[in-house]
Image 1 (cartoon, one colour):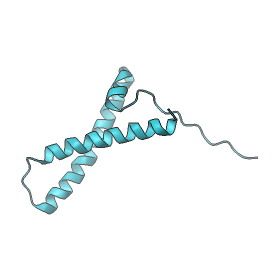
Image 2 (cartoon, helix red, strand yellow):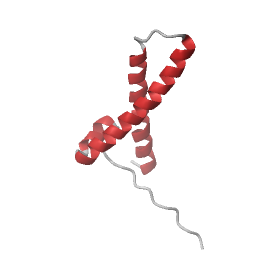
Image 3 (cartoon, helix red, strand yellow):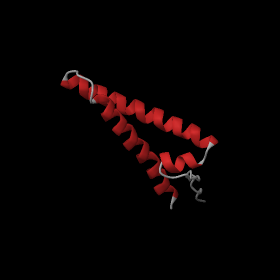
Image 4 (cartoon, helix red, strand yellow):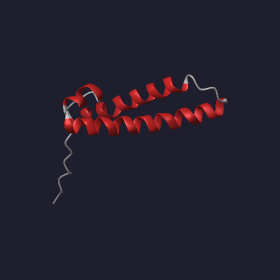
Amino acid sequence: MSDQFVSLIRTLVPIVVGSLISWLASLGLDVGAQANTGLTIFLTALVNAVYYALVRALEKKWPVVGRFLLGSSRVPEYTPPQASS
């Protein structure tokens, strides 16, 4: 797998998981339509960030965690572009 594909997987999986958790959490809330939209957006961003940070921290101790919770245990390696002469 290319580094670009791995980075996409490791970005999209937390977004999907965070969005699903936020949606499930918002189901029981009874607020107005505008407040519900804003709350859902806020919860989604917050849950995505917390999920990703937590999984990355766990992955440092147990590398296999990345495979199951981020979609890949391989961390992409980025190299700087070659300078043209």
